[in-house]
Amino acid sequence: MRFLAFSCLMSLLVAPVMSATPEQKGLEIAKQVRDKNNGFAGEESKMKMVLITASGQQVVREMDGKVLEGGKDGDRSLMEFQNPKDVKGTKMLTWSYKNKEDDQWLYIPAFRRVKRINSSSKSSSFMGSEFAFEDLGSQEIEKFTYKWLRDEKVEKRDVWVLERVSKEPSGYSKQIMYMDKQIFNPMKIEYYNQRGELLKTAEFSAYKQYTIGSKKLYRANKIHMKNALTKKESIFTWDNRVLGKKFPESDFSQSRLK
Image 1 (cartoon, one colour):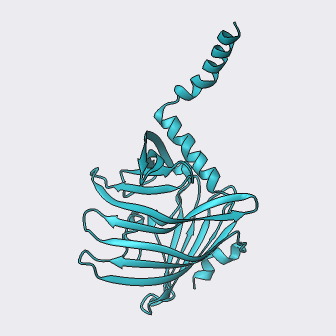
Image 2: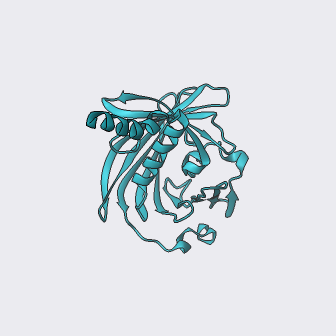
Image 3: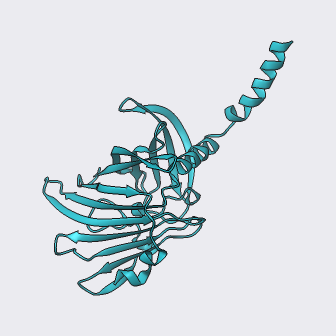
């Protein structure tokens, strides 16, 4: 009787998990990833972006970046180009939101004006790279639908494979994410265009662990984006990355762009 009672109890505990739909499971995993990565307060870093043509020619750009973690809403980030001279002083400001479209502005010093990135431009190339403006915007889970596809291994690491679809206008029909089960961060993301073709793949590496209070956070310090159609590539890397920084909100105001 004790065994029967224990079996009944276990069936009650396991049943909700077993009956979860792929959509419910995908959303639950996305929430876990969000919770594991929250709590960094603010971030400051030196960044480098390498643009690689199909023939292998390279252009290197250097930037300063900082991020202010959002409270009830999304994060705010500011990126400023330092080198080379033709892009020095160019800045991009992003205000992310959970339940509405992000605000993004690009300051171009040559014209001394601020350009607002509208919805139709979100899928455009960021500064000639293989990263789109929307790739650098909000990744808030409220803006996507999720679906668990399967579990598998990537480079001997256990991952969840999730399908993510934007609820807002997007240049992508879907994204396939390979999420590491141990560090709760992506190993790679595949981006598909509106025709359902693989457009590009982002590979995440050089992960480092950061300690903020009692919390351990992981961040990829290299993202390698490869365009499957044009064969062009772009690489983002981070140096001197510091988490736990505190910034006044005024550092992320539109007036700071000029």
